Length: 257
Image (cartoon, rainbow, N blue to C red; front, side):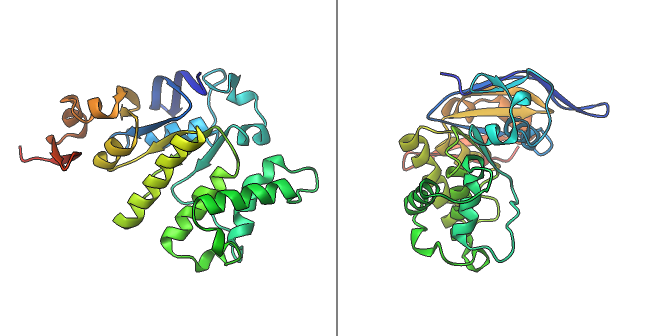
């Protein structure tokens, strides 16, 4: 089953192609990481998928429907997006922030109903932040904030979760905790995660599939284990990369030329 499909997508900024002739399909219960050097088009691609950036008609379809034909509310039920720097309203509690993810399901009065509360509490418990729902968001630790941001996306109950650098700015413990959490969501909740990641080792360890962008085009697309060992990856990044195995884990490291 195809959840999301991109057909011949090109996005231009003046005379410069940010993305050019992109063709991709995404499926349930999978994690696809979009990687590539800076300026390759990663953020542009995830913004196009999520509807944050406008796209040409009939190039991106969600649930078999052209994304340009969907209302904001309809799109929110199909795809949830977490940008690199989410805007958090001042003075809001964690519970209130998570409840914002239920907006697409609320009626004209935009009130939080019993079902909304149940879903917020269930997701919060799943992400181990249920005990701090009453706290002000700004008072939370870095790891708690990141779980809160992810929880808000998950309470949308969308089939596709799009994340732009979800571990940026976190220390290694919180990076791994966040990625473990996302891996569980893929396996237990049947969601499709599409993320951008800078760390090639972590992308290779957690994602099922890697899509490598180079100058706005898909240069490589395949299983994570195949892509991190592809010699072309060194050419794309302009650095010699090697894969070493330590205790069964494959690490991508730069090597002297």
